[in-house]
Length: 349
Ligand code: BGC
Image 1 (cartoon, rainbow, N blue to C red):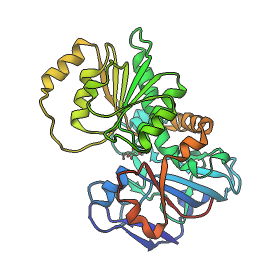
Image 2: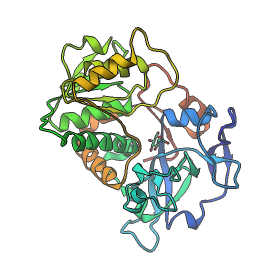
Image 3: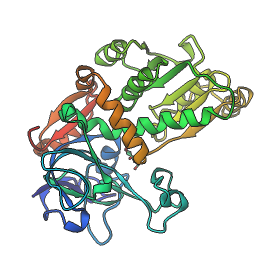
């Protein structure tokens, strides 16, 4: 069968190649790939900056934002032929650490976790893949191709849950939320925060096009420019850009007792006219919490699948701005200005 592979940490090694059929040891459910979403992590792996192949193998099958159709449900697990499923990304470390031991692998404390398509286990960019029943999530059939949005939705479900948990440290009734960055994570965060009943604001550098339209269609407010100019002090911020300037301004703009979740991963860059000590002092004087959030455990996968099933299909469909074939995977990995979520489609839905 065909798979999109890479030799991790070696730039220019990504290719569509013949690989062996998935091994039964990878899970009792056999799945036909329908589509795989592409995200910044995939781009980094292809650029040779991130990623690990399985032990003793030269290549890694890419892809962690999956959607597939069950071909053979295997002997257990309550799945049937034809079910749409998405595979969980992370597996607990083998020790296991206390977090992994209780199923909170997203909070793994020794770093020995593995991740499909990212860290030491093959991903989902192959014509067929296998999955363990306990790591397969059934997707509402009416979502169709939109089920490929489940993985990024789980990252959002975890981030929002953590904000709510942290908020319990004091009397705190959040009314407003600012989301910085209107990519797939930011827009899904806006959707879920709206479903949660918050006054939602989204800031992005794009001044026109589908991003502002999508935000306004939710009944949320769109901003471009500096966070310092949004005109209010948000109770919480979900930071999805990973850009130093936006992070610093978000901390300065955050309201009293406010919580800022860092969900974007950036590198390098410099910050204009901002002192780390001044930014920190503003956080101290407002009792702010600034925390990072990555990955998701089964609780978040469940919540995200429920929220996605309730979301407006027409709005969700506008998040998928480009569909490429596996042969064109390199184009899928190249970002265009209007891209929100680019998907590689392996088979018809
Ligand atoms: C994935 C997460 C993963 C993280 C770090 C993200 O793109 O969505 O599941 O934990 O990369 O590898």
